[in-house]
Image 1 (cartoon, rainbow, N blue to C red):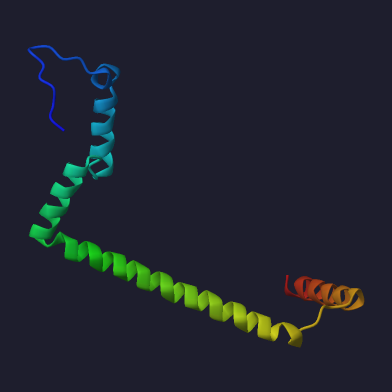
Image 2 (image 1 turned 90 degrees about the horizontal axis):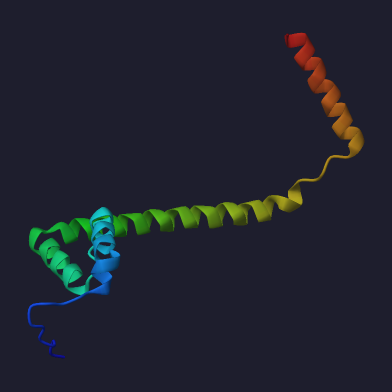
Length: 110
């Protein structure tokens, strides 16, 4: 779509309210352009400099670390579920006996 011609004077409510300046500040602070053309230029520079390889490596490393952590969590949960039937709750009398023995050990060690 062609732009309309303005002869010497144009008014932008976005610039008047500071929207454009805020967008620019946010874009600079997060390091990612908010416009499509800016993102394309940044991606082009990254491809030219080889930084995209480093970025992709970091993403894949993070994903692999996440996958290993997820597998560990699943395995520990399954093992906990398998061991659940082998343990039993202590009765109140057994708990009281255990407390007495622990308090005796504390008093003799002090």
